[in-house]
Image (cartoon, rainbow, N blue to C red; front, side, top):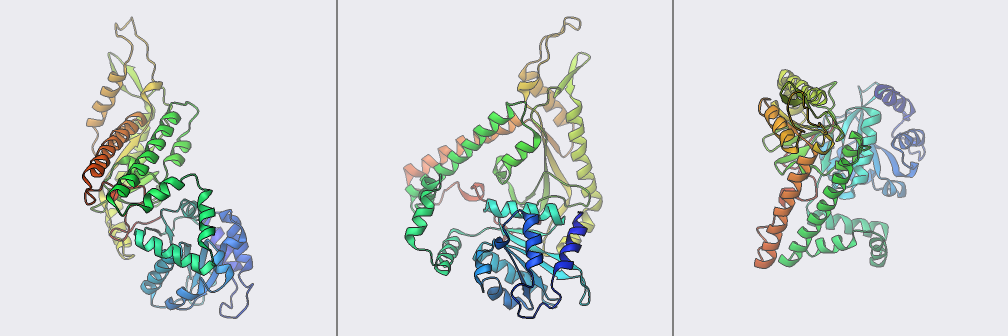
Length: 430
């Protein structure tokens, strides 16, 4: 089914007498949604919200609500959409649940439309649920949420109390995790020594990821999809100047691999291609030029930027009305493509030129890159080498903090393993 057909079918399954006290009135809609999201039915909960204040009760009032990972809130049409979103956001922060908000197209309509949703950006399971929702229902303005350490601890303790989980039970659950040592190190981060240990744990995890990515880009069987899946959520690898990420497209019909927002609200599109590109460069007369796949990827990014330039003003107004301040004109893009190690161009006695070396490939891409406005072309090998050098620097900074006892100079900041703080620059899932 198309996204419109999926939403239409869900609308047909929703009980039309929403305020009647019947426990199973949303079972058909729940089962249909759970199947789409590849979840057990017990993980999906539907509830009718007649006013914003009901959010704090409806989504936690029963065992089914507490057990659910996804809450689908059916919002009664009222002139309090801002209050509704505030209440929904607060509930998502307090419970860690993924929220999807639906509202009738009009007071008399049986068709329900999607208002948006909220999810915890640091929770990989929530990210997977959001991806499935977007795949089935199309572009949705989801807002990823982050919490401070104090808020996270408070929320966890409240949850433990609500479900009656003991300290011993928590210990048993944690003992089954492979990253238990890292968890303990983070818990000690209130001291200078503990903070250094936490930073070291993050750096170690990131080095492991880079090592795995390097193994992947050295394998000709690795696909673009494999790399995209592996890098998901680890956007620190592109640098620390970004404050948010949007999923999917900003412009209708265009779907970006990784759209990142900078501190000034401008958009930077990351376009990922495969690492196995034997024709990354090719001979042209006496020189080397980028291969056809590089040209195609670059023009794909150029078309994205052109579309943003042409429609940016109107889209900015559209998103501004939803409380999102973006600067969609004069955006930039980076194309990640190929690996120099797969290029094998032997010497050519006829042209009297030698075999192509890594340095020659780098110079060819650098020359091409310098002639393109607002688009950078980078190989996977260069991207990972740059990220590795950055981690080496972070490691040195962390060691300095440990030796001096300097807590305020921590390098965790924006380049921690978590998503950026969306309170100051909220992002849109499209």
